Image 1 (cartoon, rainbow, N blue to C red):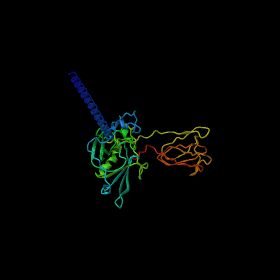
Image 2 (cartoon, helix red, strand yellow):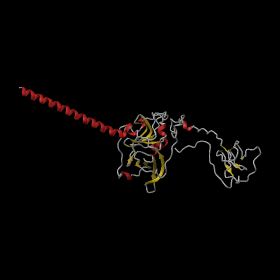
Image 3 (cartoon, rainbow, N blue to C red):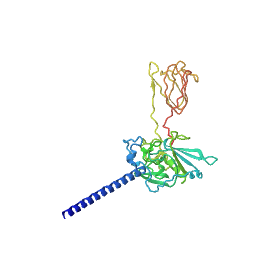
Image 4 (cartoon, rainbow, N blue to C red):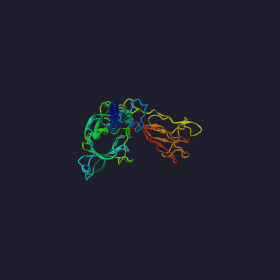
Amino acid sequence: MSNLSNYKKVQIILLVLIVIALTIFGMSIVKHNNIKNFATEATFSDMTDVAEGEIEDIDVNEEQDTDMNDLDTSWDEEAEETEVTEEEKKDNSFPYYIKINYTANCITVYTKDSSGNYTVPYKAIICSTGIATPRSGVYKMSQKYRWHQLNGGVYGQYCSRITGHILFHSVPYSKASPDSLKYVAYDKLGTKASAGCIRLTTADAIWIYNNCPSGTMVEFYGSSNPGPLGKPSAKKIASNVQCRNWDPTDPDSRNPWRTYKEPAPAPSTNQSSGSSKSETNNAPTGGSTAGSNGNSNPPSAVEPNKGNENSGEVNQNNTTGGNTGAGSGEEKEPDNETQGGNTLAGSNSSKEDYDNSQGNSNSNI
């Protein structure tokens, strides 16, 4: 009887061990599946952990929130892969063919030649790609969205789906409103800055949205050469507190960039000591001005294209409107400021052209 009890005890112990082993085995399977699912989702989700080492030049001191939550790919389930077959690549029924150079962050749009092949460069577009951007392949565009939510709780406008979770869209906005632009992200156009989608200026996103219908083919490739039309630039806007929450290219009538005028730079006075005493050129406004040697007497007459023949430097005067001839008996260093007129510096031994204009020039958008 005692032996029988011992036998039952052994059975019970073995049963308990089997249950424990099965439990541990089941837990390991669940854990493995969770890791696998995370790895899959990280490719097209917000990619917070993966992207921290990949995003270029994030300034953590910016006033605007620059955490990784605005790393954008499409969040929804309409994410079918649209890579085309070799036979589909022959379709030339669409007006344009788009090539995305993910290395140069530049897009070239091609139109058809006389033979119906997409060989004619039509338009170059600056963009930002990301770590999940395809590196090769040809895909056909599908759905379009006026506004669309992206991963991280941000929004893009004028979105065109390329394949899966990868879209063309504007730089992200914190909400579905054109006055909530992520201006730090905008200033990164032309660099690797997204999670995978193709970020564009609003104007370029609108152009693709309106002119490249669903079915238009998009090819991905990498090259240090941006393309046959080169790479455009985009305006930097973060320093403009008044307008920076809007995309400068957005045609919305409420856009403050439409009426914004760049402030005139403060005037500067150049001083130099070309001889034993300091000389300063003081420019009157309006009319023609001749060079002054610092004395109260008027300057000596100067023939055209002739100045200080014995001087190794060019005499240059500030002027606002009108032409200026420079010539005197003393040496002077050039004053490089001209406004609204042409300046002629006379010297047979040294002649330089100065081309400085007042105001800030706008970059191509």
